[in-house]
Length: 515
Image 1 (cartoon, helix red, strand yellow):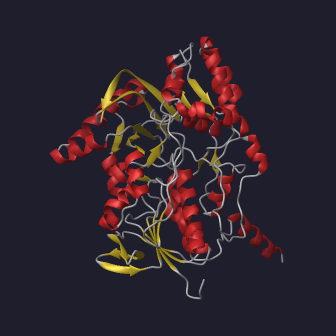
Image 2 (image 1 turned 90 degrees about the vertical axis):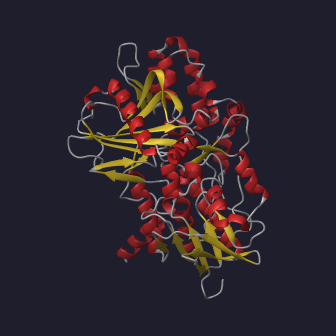
């Protein structure tokens, strides 16, 4: 690289943009991140209402355990530090009164404890329980592979060890069968309806059984903990790491377009002015970027494939601030809805509610914060309500219905709800520019995994890193995408890919003090 540092413009300060920014700044680039919001994190976010804090972006973090390769990446980009230690709750979720004696039914992290607990609940499901635990055990050795792209110059190689690859082989025998089976079909092998409710809605019902077993096994092997401070602190940690390396984040700055001349992306357009750059990285939803910042300047076959084939995940997020002490209730509750309930144009037979009554900083003393994700594609339903002018009215109606149902399960909240908040897919679209309010991609049954290019084929200097680049999406894929695209940029600009980890920085600091 020449003495004058190459300029990279990054659109979006979400997890992908921040991760790419850290790696690129560490590798010697002059990086500016343009963010339309006032905060970093993108879809990994939370917000406060009258003293209550709603965690809207993360309920567990894959790669939070030091044994996982992904943990090293989270440390490198600054996401996990001493200020946000990871907590591993012993229970993943619970069904209130789901046991024969009326006590709560739990989905335990400990696989042996889970096996015995489920057998006590439903002896007639012995075979299904045995299969579930066997499948989860097989996949405990499986982790997201983190490697380097071909032709990369770097002093910090990462690749799966031979031992870890061999350990994954038993899971490979079940891979195809689970991939071709739907999540709901897998759970149908249980006769007990409370066990089905317990495990349903951990992920989207549109996913395959493989996604469910992989998620469950991540918990049972001790991964997928919750970093203290949640999404907001993790994103801020990454932003601070980036700026400490000389990177710049311009908040409240909306990028109107990518400037492309002679098939070269040479800057971004802000307030009608071109901000020159040697490369442009789109670090928010590619599907939305094609419509909003690339427009008629970009069309490639892989984008059409993404538009045609990607199954998108949506949700309605509900947050409640309750003037009641709810510490006796579990953190995560799977609550069945007798007869089902229609909300946002979708019928729900259960809802998963998160109780932050035991968490510091989430609510005033003596009060509790409750949240719920209602998964499903309700975007068009809400968009139509916006168009006919009934959007605000429908939000209040949905909150009325939801609160009335929740009071049946948690009677202490009746008459004590101080704050009600609802984020629809239209809300997510407005604040994060994600396509139709979709925050990740799903992996349906009988479909192969996909990975989309990190750079354009017909426009030089145009790159992509976001939740759409690799299925099924989510936080692990966002940070992977940011790292992967940063490596592609380093290779294209013939510079060495570097990233001094927080651990090595800490060691150097201690060595300096000892000297």
